[in-house]
Image (cartoon, rainbow, N blue to C red):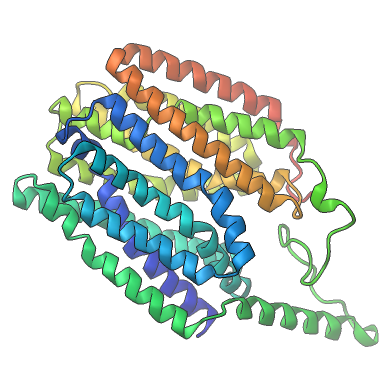
Length: 421
C-alpha cells in the first residue's frame, strides 16, 4: 500500500472514531445532569476524563515502545472507546455513566502514542506536515458529523439518549473492521520510514560522490539524520528552563479553562437550549476549532510562539459569554471555547519542539502531556465548583488565572526562541 493511501485510510479510521466519541462528548453534560449530576460533578468527571487521556500516555507510550506491539495498543484503545459510547446510552445510574465517560477517554490514552507512531512512519514518505495535516483535517470532519447525527436522533426521539448514543455503534464497528483490514495489509508500517531513509541516503551518496553537487540539506525541524546516534549524555541532559516555564504557562491556561461538559450543563439546566440543540452547538465549536488551529498554525510559522498570547485571552472570554442567560451570547461563548481548543490542540505542541532538542523531545512531550492532563482535571473541577457557588466569582477567578498565564508566557520570552535550534 502506498504511504498516502495508508495516511488516508488511517484518517478515515480517525474520522469514524471522532464521529463516535465527539458525538458522545457533545451531550456529556446534559446526560450527566439528566442522571442527577451537579455542575461540580460534571466538571470533575469531564476534567478527570481529559486528564486520563493525557496523563496515562506517560505509561502507554513507553509500554508501546517496549513491547513494539503498536497495532495491538491501537486496536485495544479504539475498541475501548467505541464500546464505551453505545453502552453509555444505556446507563441508568450516575456512577456508571461517569465511569464510562472516563473509560472512553482512557481508550484515547491507550491508543494515541502507538497510533501516532504508526502514522509517523508513513509521513516520512508523504512529508510530516502534510501527512499529519490531512489526518487532522479528516479528524475534524468526524468531530462535526458526530454531534450533528446525535442532535438529529435526539430531535427525532424526543431527547432519548439511548438511541442517540446507540446509533454511534455503527461507525464504531466500522472503525474496528478498518483497523483489522489495515493491519493485515500493512503489518509493519516502519517499512515506509526505512525505505524513505534508504532512498535519502542513496540520494546523498549520489550527490556527494565524485565531486558532484551535494544532496539537499535537511529542512528545519527535520531532526537527526537516519541512523545517527546521540552525542554522549545527550539523552540525559536536563530539560531547558524555558520548557518548564512554558509548561507552567500551559498549566495556568488549562487550569482556568472550563470543559464543554460544564458549558453544555449550563445551556440545558438554564433552559437556554434543548438537549437536541446542544450537539449542534458543539459541532459548530469543532468547526471553529479547525479554523483556529489552521490560523494560529500559519501565524506560528511566521511570528513564532508569541501568537500563543491569544490563548489566555480567549480562555478568559469564554465564561463571560458562555455563562450568561442570553442564548446568542452563550452560543458565542461556546464558539470562543472552540477557538481556544483549536490553539491548544495544535500550536501549543509546536512550541515544545522548538524549546527542546531532538534527543529529549519525546520525554518533554510526555511531561507536557502530564502537565496538560493534570491542569485540565483541575480546570474542569474548578469551573464546575465555582459555577455552583457564583458565576461572577468564576469569571473573576478565570480572569486572574489567565492574567498569570500571560505573565508566564512573557517570562518565557517566546520571541527569542530559536526555531532552528
